[in-house]
Structure formats: C-alpha cells, structure tokens
Length: 212
Ligand SMILES: Cc1cc2nc3c(=O)[nH]c(=O)nc-3n(C[C@H](O)[C@H](O)[C@H](O)COP(=O)(O)O)c2cc1C
Image 1: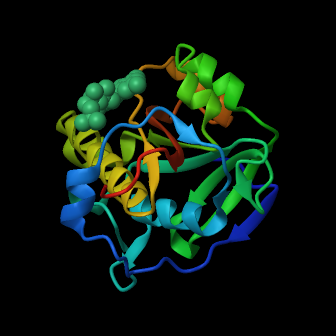
Image 2: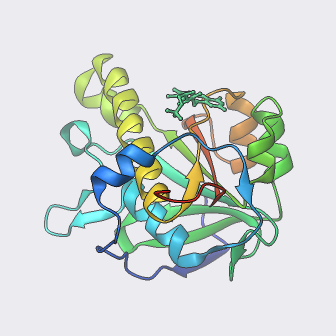
Image 3: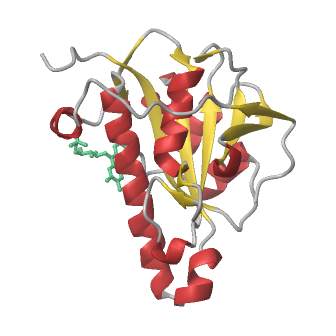
C-alpha cells in the first residue's frame, strides 16, 4: 500500500450520463498513440479513476469493475505531466476509491522516467496523463491460492477496457501498455515490491474526429 500522501484532493462525483452510447464507444475504441495538444481536466481524471475502481454500490462497497470474491487486488495511480491536467500539479497520485479522492505521493514530472521504464514508448512520454494499475496478488491468492493469480489478470483486463471505453466516450484516446520493466515502474510510483505493475495507460485528447 502507498505511503501517507503529501496532500489529498477530493474529486467531484462522476457523471453517470453521456451522449455516447456504450455501443458507440465499443465500436469507436482504438488504441491511440498520438494526442492533440491540450490539457485534460480534473473532472476527466475523476471520471477515469471512477470507471477504473470507483465505488458503485455504497452498501457493499462494490466497485465499477468486477473482482473475484470482491478481494480488490488492484491499485490505481495517475502520473500527471507538467501542465497535463488543468488544476493538478505534476506528480504521482494514488486513487482512493472509498472517498473518491487522489492522494499526492510524489511531486514533479515523471513522464520521462515512466517512458524509459516502458522501453522508451513515446506516447507514455507525451501523454498529459498516464494511468498505472498495479496489483497486490496476496489479497486474492490468500483466498483462492495460485488460481487467484489468473483472477488478478482477468480483473486488470476489465479495468483496462473500462478505461478505454470511458476515454473514448469523453473524446480522449488511450492505449494499454504492457511492455515495461516492473522495477522501474515501481520506482516511478515509489511503491514496494508487494505491488506488481500490470498496465500503464497513457491518456490524451484524441486526434480522431469522433463518430465521423
Ligand atoms: C496485454 C496488452 C499489452 C499491450 N501492450 C502494448 C504496448 O506495450 N505498447 C503499445 O503501444 N500497445 C500495446 N497494446 C495495444 C495493442 O497493440 C492493441 O490493442 C492492438 O494493436 C489492437 O489494436 P486496438 O486496440 O486499436 O484494437 C497492448 C495490448 C494488450 C491487450
């Protein structure tokens, strides 16, 4: 689990309405590796965090993506580039689903280091925001033994697709990046070996004309 944050930012409640249907989002979704110049908004970041791991059932504290036995092994981070998000300083933030907030863990623009950790993939360096998803396997393997490992991998797929579709519906583009050095990504986040990074997802403004 991440260290105590330097600062906590409460996010606005997510929007549950869109002019884009789920079918349109599925048909328009592509992996996008080039982005228009422009900042994201905090509300877009909020929406992306929510679709990844936000609480959608307060009574059961259930989340936007399914999880084997509701063991919730995944942690979500936002790595913000300098000037990448209106109203958010560059840095590494950890998403806290319980109160829909971001905890600032590290100050500064770490997109260059993150891109190097991802074998120099330029879209990671250029994106205003990178979402990083890590897993604490023990939360799931404690209950399911080694079979829990496959459950964790299935789960990150659900979260990745939610992020793809939510980004698409907001006119943003993303790509699921799986090629990186685990240790180097961990170092960028400042997290312990207990967490294994599974996806890095750069997000930027889409260059495609939506539903053209
Ligand atoms: C597990 C996984 C790992 C991936 N890793 C990378 C990656 O490291 N870099 C990259 O540019 N794209 C990566 N992709 C994106 C694929 O290249 C992309 O999904 C594929 O070309 C199909 O295109 P589409 O997503 O637009 O349908 C990955 C996709 C998956 C599912």
